[in-house]
Image (tube, rainbow over all chains, first blue to last red):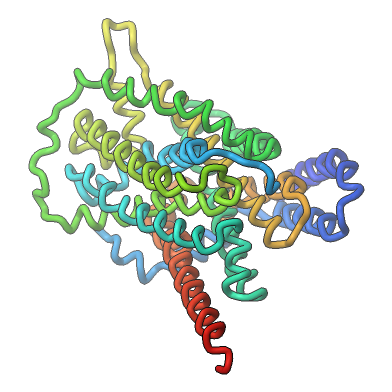
Amino acid sequence: MKWGTFFITGMLIFLILLLQWPKMKNSPIKDKLAFISLLLIGWVLSMFDLMHISGPVSWLDTLTKPLTRLLEV
Amino acid sequence: MKNVKISSLQMMMLMYPTIIATAILSVPSIIAKYAKNDLWLPPIFASLIGFLTMFIVYKLHQLYPDKTIIEMVENILGKIPGKIVGFIILAYFLQSTGEISRAYGQFITTSFMFNTPSIVIISLMVLLSAVAVYGGLEVLGRLGQLFFPVFLIPLIILFFLLIPSYEPKNVLPILGNGLLPSIKGSIIPTAWFGEIFLILFLLPYIKDKQNVFKFGMLTVFSAMLTLVLVCLMVLFVLGDTTATKIYPLLTAGRYFSYADFFENLDSVIMAIWIVGAFIKISMFYFAVVAGFSQLLNLTDYKILIWPIGILIVEFSFWAIPSSMVFNRYENTALPFYAGFVQTILPLLILGMAFIRKKVKKSLISNPSQ
């Protein structure tokens, strides 16, 4: 857990909500749902110690391991 | 959104920095590891992938002239498989945007601003790009027009200014170790040339569609030419030591000195890089945001800009603890991942589209079947 980044991201999300929400009053419910859920995904991700957990980069490293042998000098 | 229009020249001015901006700094040393003093050859081989991708892009565009790639795959593959393939493409571009921002942050923190945390640099660049994307595609097109000379002219001036430091015999012996090392070295830069795929996100908004193919091919060609020139420049100045430098062009820029007055051209290179990285990140950012809004059938793509901005900053750190891990990923996994999403996947989609058209035609001519 990284509380610092979590709270800073929370504040940013609050700011985004504050500025963007009034402009979205007339948008359909689908738009609002997409907006909120993407913000939530961002917030949840900020809880983790992102640099030191496995992620897309390490998954792709494993996936492409057989091919990278081609590139050995 | 559909009434926004840019010209195909503007498209070229956007795509050229998008391909070349990050390539001119890091690619020469990556290639030099394989090709040694033939490092000017691999960009030529790699550009073949760029030409192929542009050809696929154009054929897809001819079949579905008013659709972006995300809408296209839904039409070709059907609703659910189309959404899945669209998501794969967008996930690649989202992650790439994060990586490009990371590469940018890394370059600034290792070469110029040593004490600034890279998250500050990355967030500020993403914020700037977000504002540009918020302006819309027309604004991006004009930004491309505005920054294209700012990007290109210093590079040309640099080429001529460095002439006194050149040692052309560094290029000899040509093909001393045969052709294989050059071909191996050309695998990595294909990831950059394949980025011409991004045109598929712009095509429905282009005014003069008859020129798209010409300008697209010209973009790949000029990117190849620039990369070959930069590689030769670096090779002439640094020789065998090119492979040991992380940013060879930057090191080469430091060699220039005239009358003890004109020195430290590396700041010029930094300026080129920042302008290029800005255009590149904005283009990728636009593709991701517009793509997601089409994938989810939203009415306005602008609402996704800020949430995706947060994701981009997070993706630039996710599972990348150090620059070593990042460089290893860029030099091993990325070329295959990028090649799959940017070239092989569109090729498969194109094949499917052709089969679909054929089947439809035969059904119309033989309705009894």
